[in-house]
Length: 353
Length: 261
Image (cartoon, rainbow over all chains, first blue to last red; front, side, top):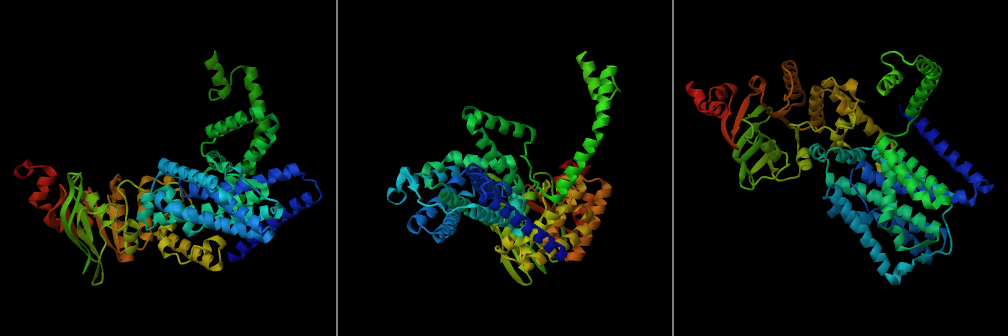
C-alpha cells in the first residue's frame, strides 16, 4: 500500500519537474515568445488566486467577494520590501511577509464576519476589500496613493511562477484531503450537522479563510513583482468578481476545475484582445453558455483523475465505434421517411407533420 | 449510576413555553424513551441537551463517573466532544459526500495529527488516515454499509440513510446517543431491523441511549424507562407497563373521553 503510494508520488514529482524543464527550455530557446510568456504568467497568478478562493468558497462554502483585498495586501507588502531591498532575497521576503500579513488580515476579518451567512458574508467581505483599497489610496506617505508604486526590477521568472503555482495547488489539495480539510467541507455540506458531529465550525471557517488569504497574498506578491507597477484600483471589486467567476466556472470544490478555468479564461481573453470591442460580449456569452449547460461548473465538485480519463477514453471509443452504425441508421430512417416507433428522428417527423 | 441529569429545564421562544420545568435522569447503560404528542417539545429537549439551543433556565449535567459537569448553553461541538451524539428527525447527512466521508468527518476529534501535517502528508499522517479509514469501515460493517462506502449519501435508500446517520453519530465515540425518531418513515420490517441494530450497538459500544419515537411498538419493546412529555412538561415517567396504564398519558394521546370509553 505505502509502496504504491510512494511510486505514485514519485511519478507525479517527475511529471512536474519535466513540465517545468520543458517550458524552461522553450523559453530559453525563445520558442515561447514574450507574448506567450506574459499569458503564462497571468495564467499562473490566476491559478493561485482561483485555487485559494476555491478553498474558501468552493470547499468551505463561505461566499467571499474580498479576495482582491487580500491579494492587494500581499502585493503592497512585497512591492514596499522590494523597493527597499531590491534583491531576490527581498522578493522572497516580500512574498512570505505579504502572504503572512494577508493571512493575518484574513484572521482579523474572519472572526467577526464568518458568523454571517451567504449574501451577508459576501457583502461584508466586499466592504472589507473596499476598505483595504481606500486605505492604500489614502496612505499616501507609504503607498504613494492612487498614483501607485513602480518597481525597477522584475524578480519573477518562470521558475518562481511555477514554484508558487505548484506549491499552492499541492498544499491546498493536500489540505482538503486531510481530516481538517474534510471538516471544512462538512461546513459547506451542512453546518448544523457538522457542529453536531463535533466540528468547531467557527474555527475551521477561520482556518480556511486564513489559508485562502495567505495564498491570495502570495499571488499578490508575485503579481506586484511581475507587473513592475501596482495601484490600488487594480484590486477593486471587479478583480474579486473575476476570481470568483473562474472558481464558479471551474466548479465549486474542484481544484482541477479551477486550474482549467483559470487557463481557459485567460487564453480566451488574451486571444480576443485583437477584437477588443466584442471581447467582453463573447466572454459573457461563454459564461452564460457554460452556466446553462454545466450549472455546476466545468468539473462540478469532481477532480480530474487518471480513472476519470480512462472512463472518458472508453466512452469516446464506444461512441466512435458506434458512429458508422448510427450513421447508417440515420440515413436509413431518413430514406424511409419513418423509422421504428422509438426512433427519435421518426418521432420528430411525425410531430412536424 | 447517573449519566445525564436534567433539572428544571425551561426554554421559551418569546411568550411560548416550548419546554417548562423538565427534569429527568438517565442512568448509565439505560435505554430510555421520550414520547409525547406532536408539538410536546421533545425535539426541543434534544436541541437543548445537544446545545443547538441554550436553555432559558435550568441545568443539564453530564456525569463522568461521580464527577458531574454542567453542559447547558455550551456549543454543540463542545457537547459532542463531551460525549453526547445525536441524529436528526429530518435526516441531516452530508448528502453530497460519500458514505465513508460521512463517517470519517465525525471521527475528526480523534485525529492526532496537527494542522501543518495536513499540507505535507507525513508518514504519521498517512498511518493516521489509514486508521481512520479502517475504523470507519469497521463501523459501517455493523450497519451493512461497508459495501457502499464509496456511494454518495444522497443515493442511499431512505432506511440506509437513517442507518448511516446513526453510524456517523457513533463515529464520535459518544457515551450518550440521542436518536430523534429513528424509525420515522420505516415499514414494520425495517423498524424491527432497526430495533435489532439499536440493541446491538448499545451492547457493543456500552452506550446509553435516549430516543424520541412515535412508533409505540418500538418504544414499548426496547425502552426500559419512558418519559412522557405534553405541552412542554413531563407528565409521566416509568417502565413501559406503567406508562401504558397511566391515565394522564392516555388523556394526552387520546383525549378526555378515551378513559370513560
